[in-house]
Image (tube, rainbow, N blue to C red; front, side, top):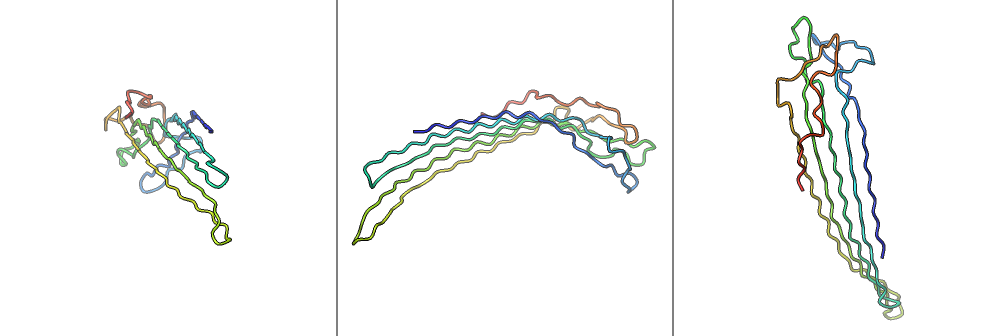
Length: 175
């Protein structure tokens, strides 16, 4: 009998880069300019499996594995959505904020019955087996600051933080 368990907790973050278009032209901006906010992300994975086998005699054996795998992902996003008023003298990006939570759970099992026997001088191996696999996925996106009014950030002089990033706030994941 063998029991396997693996757990990972990964915390990472990123900045998504955008290139604004103003008057039908890409705005030339320095590489260091970023209109979006830092987005922390957390991923948790849990894998566990139980494998057992039994040798009935020298010719027949059975083996089965049960496996469970769950991935959860939680991250806020706050970023520029579009230029609010392209004809304004100082164009600004409208920023949006969301909090997303995703989970994926997998249940699996397989069983194999293996037998060796001779018929008319020929050696034979027979394998009978079956498996079951079930995948559940669930995701939710929340808009803590609703669909507006959103904070704005200037295209020419981006000043952060604008609307604060929603934290890993009041999300209640589905069990």
